[in-house]
Image 1 (tube, rainbow, N blue to C red):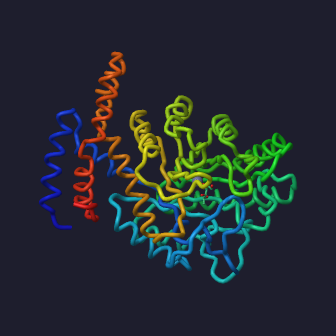
Image 2: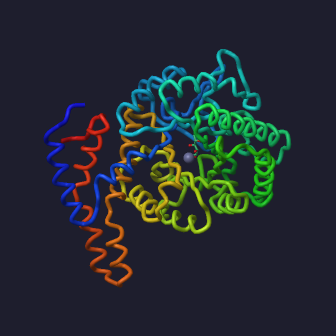
Length: 406
Ligand code: RNT
Ligand code: ZN
């Protein structure tokens, strides 16, 4: 990309202004360059997947709305869309797959039959474009999830079926990590819960705990794969009760040494997700995140640069935890251009990290330590007026991707 004089000049001035606050913009850009986000496969096709004979998203507390043209109809469409996305965002990023996106050919392969061989072509593709992979069990959109429970079902056959699925997904994750030479994070989210008042709350949670314990009993090389577990507040059809609540998984993760996955859209609308970071890092070494945007009842709107996102990225930086968080994106909007959705969401995430990296945290911290509340608040307000966009545009230019409006 050819150097743009306006972007360059604006950056030089911005660099000078940040330097006066003791902030090194070059360092911030270098840190930003190293943040590798895991881009989810499921925004390409509205979470449908490619199982035969007719993959479709149904029930299970997860739902995409909209019918914008251009939905990916086959694996090649997904790959083409993602290759396009990667050209429009700076940095080097990962790809986060779901088990339902296996390369199953024309045969029906049930969830308890998935094999590493169904993911060989994904490995070849990932290697050919130099990206690393993450993975997810797919415990929804299946007849055996229709009564609302999977790993925590009262029916032992249903539990067995899903345990087999998750066990196989973990094996596939280790394979992906080994093949690509980068640890693959395997995430488990189950939709288990109920639409209305539930009295078996404890029983289902005991069952979920026991199912997970059994599945996790098989150990894999930590360099090849790691497990994360994701909670939720409620879903469509699970308004009254969710088995895998935040407290459940927080307790599970800490007691079993499993990574807790915080999906930003899975909490009460006024809850500050950012504040969970310093709370959890008091007790754990590593976290997984799903960056998403909750909006009223839904949790999967395209990520934008808003206060919630900024608090999360700032708390990560303030906790000096950049190397201890794994960030995946998780949104699916079928009502707008899907490639565009990735571009907006990924870039908003990166801009939010950049703003956090450009914060003169030590100066603010000192004011706080000295009890200078007015000075602290004033500086934090002033930071909102600083020219971070000029640094971002320059960063994009350097990384040879389009910058924003300039
Ligand atoms: C659902 C969870 C989960 C899914 C993906 C598709 O509420 O957020 O992470 O979005 O597994
Ligand atoms: Zn999620």
